[in-house]
Image (cartoon, rainbow, N blue to C red; front, side, top):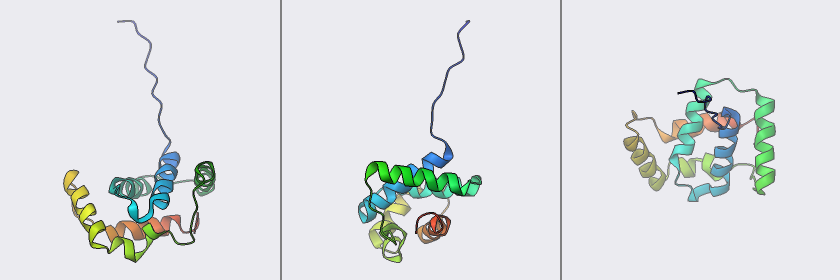
Length: 120
């Protein structure tokens, strides 16, 4: 077959992180998408990010969506990651993806540290 090569479009890792981060802070405690926490956590371990570019993309997405950013979003607080409901959601997510146990607290603290100079 003589067909042209397919063209694939997708988000850059910077945009993926920014989109997921905005959802996490917008949804707060109502967030049930543990996958977003995991995806960001995995990305920040696999790639080196240009911090200024990431900050700009995060700011643009937050502005475009009218998201209000609190100085300390609930999703990055101990009350979130130690809550029994969030613990259960996290364990169920890890079971679904057959991933070794990694504490939700560790993931969120890693994310809070990663985002600290970008947004907090």
